[in-house]
Image (cartoon, rainbow, N blue to C red; front, side, top):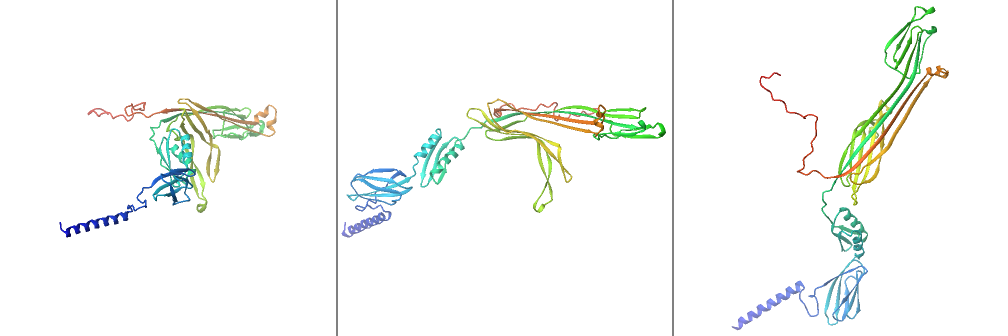
Length: 457
C-alpha cells in the first residue's frame, strides 16, 4: 500500500469521527466526563402533604430542584434524600454525588386521592371506579351499572379538584320491563227532585174573576178555558189561556173555580265507567284522558287590547302515573286521577258569551304495591241540596188554606267517585306468539257476493 493511500484512509476516518461528534452534540447524547447528561431521569409521584425518601448509592454533595414551591428536596443523611410534596405541579430534582456523578428525578406532585378513592369504594362497593389526577383536574374511569351512579360519582369528586372529567362507561342495560296499570273509574250520580205548587183561577165564582200564582212554573200554551158568568153579568164570558196544566188540573164549571197542582218527585241514577289500561317503562310517566274541550273567550292586552281570542279547556276523565320498580320487587307509583264535568248552573255570561264553570274532583297520592295488588281511592262524595220556597205574603199564613198559596222545589244530587288501580309487570309478545284480534259482532267489510249472470236483483 502506498503512502498516499494510507493518508487518504486516515482523512476519511477523521472526517467520519468529526461528523459523529457533531451529531452527538446536536442531539445531546454525547457523554462528556462528569456531565451525567446521558443518564435517564427516574419518575417519582408524591401526593400533596406526603413525603418520599430516596436512598442514594453514594455520598451526596449537592441537591437542586427546579420548582421549590411544588417540591422541597433536602438531604436527610449522607445518602438519603427527603422529597416533600408542597403543591400540585411538577419539578426536576438533580442530585450530585461527591464523585461528580449526577442523577435526575422527575417528580410529579398530585392531589391526595386516597380519601376520595376510599369514599367511592364505600359509596359504590359493587362498581369499578378509578381516579387519576392531571395537574388540577381529576379523571374518573372505569365501568358502572347505571348513569345515575356515574353522575353521583362525579358530584362526590367535584370538591377535590377544579375540573372533573367523567369518563365512566355505563354498562348496557337489559330490556326494561313494561309496567301496565289497570284503572277502573266508577262514578255514581243519584239525583232527586221534589216540587209542590198550586195555582187557583176563578172564571166568575162569587162574581169574581182572578188567579193566584207563585210564578214558579211556566209551560207552553195548551188550550182555552171559557165560562158564562151568572147573576147580573149574565151573558158575559171569561177566557183564560192556560200555558201550563202542571201535572194535576181540576175545574168546577158550576162553581167557575179551577186549580192547577204540581206535585212531582223525580229520581235519577247516572253511572259513568272508564277502564283504561296504561303501559309504560320504569320511571316514565304515562297519562290518559277521555272527554272533550270547551271554548273560553280571553281578552288580549298590549297592542291587541280589546281583541278576543278563544282558548280551549279540557274536561272529562284524566289519569297520569309515574311508576318505579324498587329493589324489593315492588312498584312505587305517583298517581293523579281527576274527573271534571261542565257545570252550567254556575256559568258566567260575559259580553254575550256564556262561559260554563268546571266541576272537578282530583286526587294525588303515592303508593307502593306488589305486582297484581290493588288499591282503591274512594270517599270522593259530592252531596248537594238546593231548596226553593215561594209563597204569597199573608195568604200563605192562613191555617190549612195557606198551603194553597205556597210552592216548594227541592233538588238533591249525590255523586260518589271510586278509582281502583292495579299495577302489573308485563312483557311484549314474541314474534312467534299468536297475535290478539278484535272480536266483531259481524264480519267487518265482508266481500261482496259474486254476481250470477241472469239472476234477479
